[in-house]
Image (cartoon, rainbow, N blue to C red):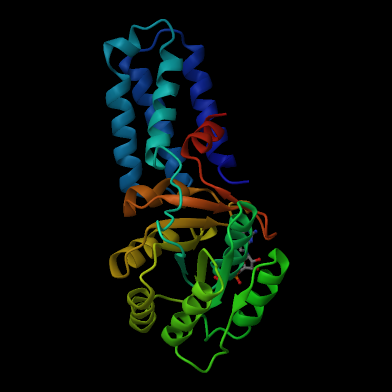
Length: 296
Ligand code: GDP
């Protein structure tokens, strides 16, 4: 499970701190050195680690903390607060249109989990009483359309497709019209991915964006790819503009760096996390719960 290594290292460091009773600035510095190494080993972005450790240290070496009755506890509390802050403080919810339908565009590289997440997200919204429609806008990856139809079928959400002969812009335009005519209040568009970011992909996504004016563009990234996922997020945000991130495969053997870095690097929140291959393995992301899980 994500953060296992990081959690173990941080918990060891803090056990030592708590065991000391009174703390000196030196003790805090030593602990922060360990925190820094643990975060770097978890594949957290270097600059993010540097800023984080500095903030925690600045807050921890004050008289109030060091002279308190439980300085170790105080430092842990500060780390918890700063970890939560790093991941976005509070849960970041979906924006729904004041006048339905709400249009959500899912974007991302091939293999990140976009199509699966379309199914998961539509299933989640359906459980909340919405009437979602999925649009199959990935006309390049063989079997992407079929795959979307399968996941749509599994969560009992209709899938709009026009095959792979028309342009994505034409398909999504017709799909949104279909959704409006059929009373769908949330429309989720599965877009094309590529193995790498390229101009063609971005242009196509920009065209789709300007055609349907989505209320949410959510980038699906694979947490297993660590810093690469964060670079991808930075690029999509710069070129297309995103409203949030869905981080997949947190159930796997990931060190967790992407979860801790992406918000700080892109200034965009993680809205959901994927926790498995099954279609109900999608959860809203809660920064405070994640921080507490890391600190045990
Ligand atoms: P796309 O190319 O971005 O549309 O990716 P897919 O939706 O086809 O997913 C690629 C692979 O990742 C599939 O085998 C999915 O089952 C798997 N996958 C997607 N999300 C998760 C997740 O949260 N956890 C795990 N373990 N696997 C996932």
